[in-house]
Structure formats: C-alpha cells, structure tokens
Length: 178
Image (tube, rainbow, N blue to C red; front, side, top):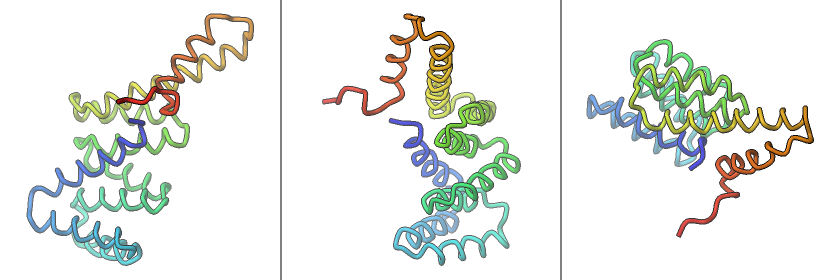
C-alpha cells in the first residue's frame, strides 16, 4: 500500500475516533460525508463551515473538512486545515500524518518526514506513521542515490541499490500477490 493510500485510511479512522464521543457528532460526520459523496460538495462545505462557526472546537469536523478538501482536489486548503489542527490539537497524530501524505505527494519528503515525526511525538505507537516514515526514508534514500550516481556515473554500487529502492517505492515494480 502506498503512502497516499494510507492517507484515506487515516482520515476515516480519525473521523471515527474523534466523533465517537457523541452520537450527534457521529451523525454530523456521516450526514456531511453522505452529502459530499452524493455530489453536493458545495452544500457539504457550506454546512461544515456553518457548524464550525459555532463549534470550532470539533476536531472531527475540521478533519472531515480536510478530508473533503483533499477529495475535492483542493489540497492547498487541506494543508491549511491539517496544519491548524496540529497547532490546536498537538496530541492528535492523524493530522500530522495527513500533512505528511500531502507533502509526500508533492515530492516534499523533508517536510513529510518532519510531519511524521510530529505524529510519532503525539503517539509513539501510531503504526501508520511508522510505516509512512519508512516510505519517506526510502524515497529520501532513492533521491540521495540518484544524486550520487549523477555526481559519479561510474559508481557500480549505486544501481543495485536504486533498483531495490524502486521495488520498495513503486507499486508497479512489485510482484503481484496471490
């Protein structure tokens, strides 16, 4: 599973965890998600913003807004939402993870690494963040080897390492699982 796919799982898990406190909160998240998925994106954002105007302390609604912004391909806005969540709720690891996934999708692996380290400070046992951090380190290693090969094209140690890293980081390069 790629880093970007784990973003969706972290979003869903977080929304469920953060909204589990009340039945009303879970109903808000479910109805807004359904509204968005049914093609009524503008209305879903209008309702989320209206709820947040009076309930800005609801991290579940803010996470949902970030999720829906990503789904709507409004990643710059989603980055702002997740960054603000990390500042307002530093003990919640999922917004850091989601920031990391968005940074990694842009090729900004240094910022992705920093965000994942934030997730792990918030929850050292957050397995998804550990796995994503491993993926980020693999991407950073691949970039370093590519730079080394460019600097010294005669170095025969680098191509096998790059090949191995490509197998780890490129889902198309992996053998199909039965």
